[in-house]
Figure 1: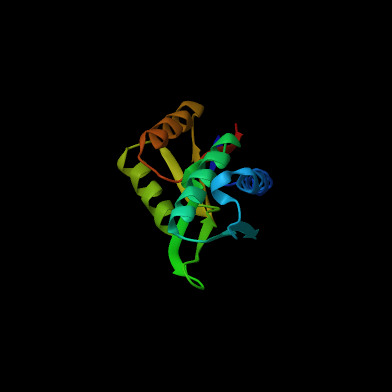
Figure 2: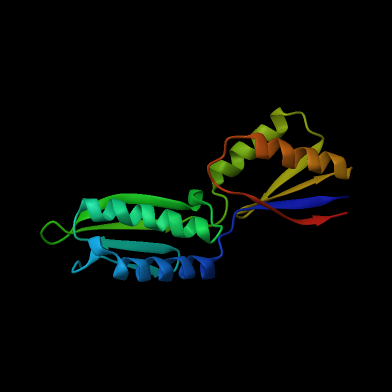
Length: 161
C-alpha cells in the first residue's frame, strides 16, 4: 500500500549560516555602527537584541532576507512580543517552528476527509502519514494540500510504493 509522510522541518545549520551572514552584514552597515544590536540562537529560538524599535524592524528585514537567500521559508519563524530592556533597548524572541502542531494536523486531516479523497491519514507525533491504494490518489492529496492556504511550509517525504 503506497504511503508518504507530511512533515515540516527546518535545517538549523542553514539557519546558523543565515544568522552568521546577518551578523556580518550588521557589523558592516553604517546604520548599525556603534550600536549594541546583536542576534543569538539557542536550540530552536533566536533572540534579537536591538537599541530601539527601528533597529529591531531593520533586523527583521535582514533576518527574512538572509533566510530567503538560504532557501528557508519565512513561514517557519514566529515572532513573539517585543520586550523592553534597559533604556530604549528592546529584545524579541523568534521561535523557529519545527513539526506540525496538533491544531494544524487536525485541520489537514479534516480538509483531506472533506475533499473526499480515497486515502487514510494518521497523525504520528508531529507528522502525518498518508496511505492509499493507488499512487495517483497520493499525488492528488499532495496537490490538494499545496492548494490550501497554509502558512507553515510542508515537505512530502518517504514516498513508498
